[in-house]
Image 1 (cartoon, rainbow, N blue to C red):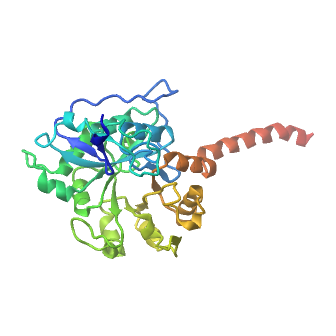
Image 2 (spheres, rainbow, N blue to C red):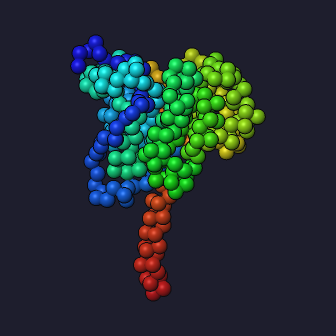
Image 3 (tube, rainbow, N blue to C red):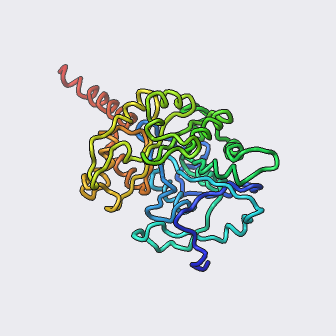
Amino acid sequence: MASSHCFAPFVFLLLLVGCSGRPFYPLPSKAGDPTNRQPLQTYRPYNIAHRGSNGEIPEETAAAYMRAIKEGADFIETDILSSKDVDFTTKELKKLRVKQRYPFRDQQYNGKYPIITFEEFISIALDSPRVVGIYPEIKNPVLINQHVKWADGKRFEDRFVETLKKYGYKGSYLSKDWLKQPAFIQSFAPTSLVYVSNLTDLPKIFLIDDVTVPTQDTNQSYWEITSDPYLDYIKDYVVGIGPWKDTIVPVVNNYLQTPTDLVSRAHAHDLQVHPYTYRNENSFLHLDFHQDPYAEYNYWINEIGVDGLFTDFTGSLHNFQEWTSFNESDDKNASSLLHQIASMVSPYKKA
């Protein structure tokens, strides 16, 4: 495809009307039985692949998501928008090719990959050799509902949830159904999340923008939507919030300032906190971390205490957690080994 057809910098997945059956995206697996896959880990903060492993491969492509899964992502994340064939056909949209969003990242994959649909995104997770969750965002629902109309009078959110149900996504957070096919639904629009709560019991995350940006649907300020009364209200509809990380820990002249109490207050309201977005490059790392992305992960996980992290570099976060996290199963194995050693030594003690 000619470079003039490359699509950047903002790439998104499409909820296309009239999609056919899902494709198959096999990933290498040592397991012979796909019904007996390694379960989702829930003992440490979630590794959320922001638009795939897009620090390496152009975002929201099948290749970026498959790379993220290989690198250890717990969830793959995406933006969902809607299109109808009266504007562009699926065939026409598939002619588009994407390129790397930032010029300082690897450009060798530019023009190689097409955009993918919501159903194709879901297929990548379902075909993984282990359980991998999905984390789709209802993107700009106010705008879409103004400009895209369906004959049956349904809304963008209705179609969004119908697609999730079609592929078996259901269940409240940590329920048996949810653990089988994990999913979080996210949006910056609180009214959209409230509406969706009547359609599915899947857990939802309220995204929070910069302090200067009001909500897109209710025009509420950052200070209002992070107040205790509002957190108490929204917890009836969501299981957590997804704030921009610089609103949790303010930054001045690229240095961290005193953290706010947003995380502790959210936890007091039984809400998880999944900040965005963590990136390895020096241009994104605050000076406190001395050009070390692992120092940043350590700060946010062990000092701030977040419950999940949106990252462009899934492999880096996975490596940090593998090297530093406590695994309950490992502790049980170590305890069992100690008991075995003790039983072997005890006869000699008696002698």
